Length: 110
Image (tube, rainbow, N blue to C red; front, top):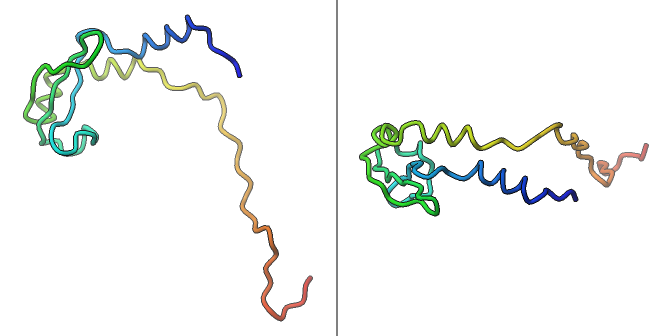
């Protein structure tokens, strides 16, 4: 297995980490783990990155109001995070074939 040098790993990690002052949304309610697009009328918490953790910065009454409050942070973060490299597709799997030959009762073997 090829090992990545520590400097390259640290640089890649630093690109993925949020910038101090960056904001994000978190749905409030019983199911906070659901996606942001689910139940757009539910209230949202606005969190801000202080360099070590996400801290509460405010509350908005719904998704559209919260999106206006955080500004372009979400799009800037999405552009910073690189997609994994994929140079080729995985090999096509072989078609499934049964391991035993099944015949109807009373038919002669071929």
